[in-house]
Each structure stands twice: as structure tokens, then as C-alpha cells.
Length: 258
Image (cartoon, rainbow, N blue to C red; front, side, top):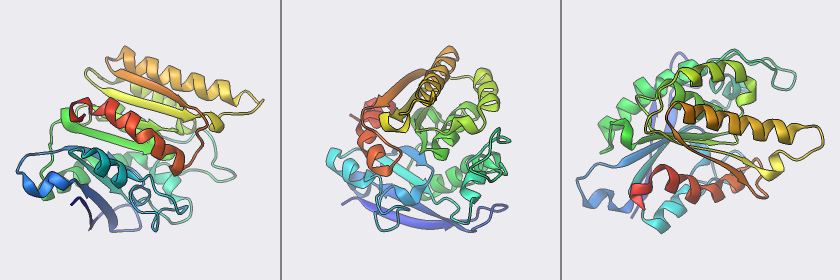
């Protein structure tokens, strides 16, 4: 049977240390010696278990992966649950706007470095997963979606796939764009999405958010990536909506597993 394993890993200099990691291992893992494609995710507490998900509903990753019998390892990192520190840790550049009335003290670059130089090597020691970028993806939603955009842009030598779900790139739009325009994306497969009900309203927000998604898609494509910009009908900013996207973005990112 498939299973979810947990371990903790030092994440200093960030707080809430050490940080919990959840790992999905497919049913076939114990019956073969082969290596597995891998997807690293932000907000790991929301991926597998409703009981630990922030709002009582997870993405339901395990159920989908079990049903499809995909030979994919999914690894999720717990976010910082103290105050607004999740916003700080998932913002890679100086924020160009406030979060409500609060400033964001951006340290997403530290988080990104930890993903590449601490989390990834540790998981490669523990599990039979590929190291080469062809088989390695990164993903997240909201601020985690922003981080996924940042990671595939900055570390395109590490990741070749990204799921950027409801990305909050408006917090550091200009800096992110500069980074993307300098990145090398040959062979990358990048999924970008917003939900219909995230962008309703008469204040121009729908146009701004949709056009920003298309702008990022165009920029990544100009750097050599294949992109899939997707507008989810009736989708909203929730794990229940993002669960419905799993079959779409996984097949796009990992076509060889289907």
C-alpha cells in the first residue's frame, strides 16, 4: 500500500524549527528498486490529511495518486504557522505592497535556498528519487504559487516542472519579472492557474489577474518553456478547488507517468 511518512528537518535561520516534512510513497515503492520522479510542494500540511489542513480540507493528493497508481513521490514542507511569518517566508523579494495593514519581511530567498540545498539533498538520501532536473518538480498555491514561480525561474538547473496555482505574484511583480526574463527555461513545463471566482468583480481585478498570468506564461515561453495557463471555471481560492486541478497539472508536468 502507499503511505505517508513524516520527518523533521532543521530550517535555521528561520523559526518554527525544526520543520515537519510529509512524504507520499506510492504502492510500488516497496516492490521495486527503481528511482522515482518527485514533486516538492509548499504548505505540505495541506496536501494529504484533512485533520492537519489549515481549513479542515486537504488537496486529497493521496487519494488521486492511489487511484491512478502514479509512480510519483510527493514531498511537502510545513509552512510557518506563527503570525504572518508564512507570508514572510514565501515572499522572495521586497514586497511591493502590504499584506492587509502589515508589512511583509521577505525571506523567501532563504526558504528557496533551503529547499534546494537542505531539503532536496536530505530527501535524496532518504528515498529513491531522481536528482536530475528532468524528473524534479516544484509546486504551491497562493504565496506558495508565487514561490513556485520564483523557484523555477531562479533554480531552472534544479527543477524542470512547476505548478503555480493561484500565484500571489502581485506582491513582488517587478522583481519577479526581472528574474524570469533572465532565466533559462529550455525543456521546462510550467502550469499556471487562477479560479474564476478568485477574479470576479467590477474593479478591474479580473483583467489584471488574467493578464498577469498570460504575461508570465509569455515570459517563460520566451525563455524556452512550455506553459499551460489555465482558468478554472467556478474555481476559488481553496484546497477544495485546487484538488480539482491535480489531474490537469500532474499530467501536464509528468506526461511520461501516464
